[in-house]
Image (cartoon, rainbow, N blue to C red; front, side, top):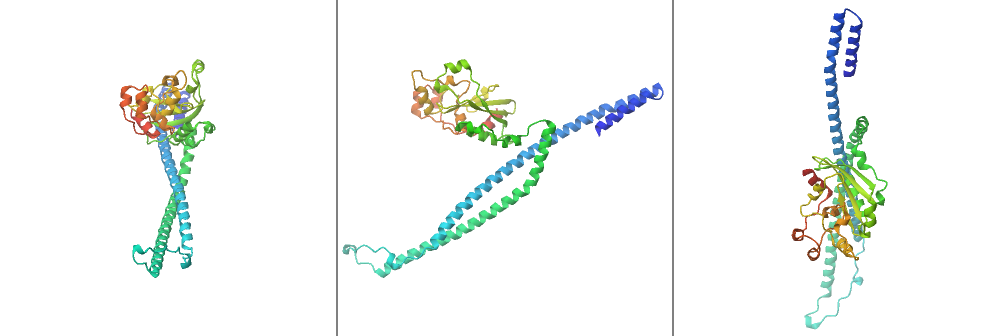
Length: 381
């Protein structure tokens, strides 16, 4: 409508210039052109309102996708619990169908020793055995009743969650359709599509990098963290030819790396994770700047020492011991090992005999940090 109004004002100004007296032509042209700035301002306002509504719809889609993922995880958990209950119920029913023990099947009592007192009555012993069998059967039937109640409750909970999933499915399909149209109009890639996409080279990653890649892919576009991951890619390593020729075999990294692009509160950060198979160590660097942010994630971890005993042993083999500086630009922080599922703890005896500085040797082991914790710390810096 605004564009049509601008065109109509231009047509009126053109007609006024071609017909009528010169003074009338000039006045009509100026009046038509005076409407154009207001119409342009209105057009810009509508563009801003459309961009704001697009951002709100994208955030709503992310929230609904997160809810759908949580519902799917809960459904899988309920399914496994139901299978376990069914297995235990079958065991209890098999025990209930077992025949009663006859007197001939009972194990005979050992010969009585006269020194232990009078011999017990055989009838009393049989009664005690029957009473013990009766108590056991009652306990089994009570367990069966409890299991049946638990299975019924689990089935009701699963049915309720499936109903809620079905109720949310139409709304989610509408939002996904709106997201695709908005993404094509704004010429941006939707983070929902990036989170579900499977990298074709993911199966070629070593286990630590694969764990990091899978975890980071699940957190793409999450709005609840301090820093937001908006891209997770697998890229080949670009080594320096001169440094590669002079490097020891233990310092050679895997040819594939995992690259995370993160938007912090004040800056855009790119993290590149490398894996060193001989040392079983993950290294991280920030090629675009931000190394001081990585060092600030854990105040007691400066990355200038090997993070665990295996790396320290592998580095000490050979005539020339390997230094941590040979891994540069990658830095083996302890928190980087945890992101790949690698234990990063050194015993006190190893710490005292290694090249650790005095403050690092006296510091206590920090708590394990997850990828969400690291993102929250980076967002607060």
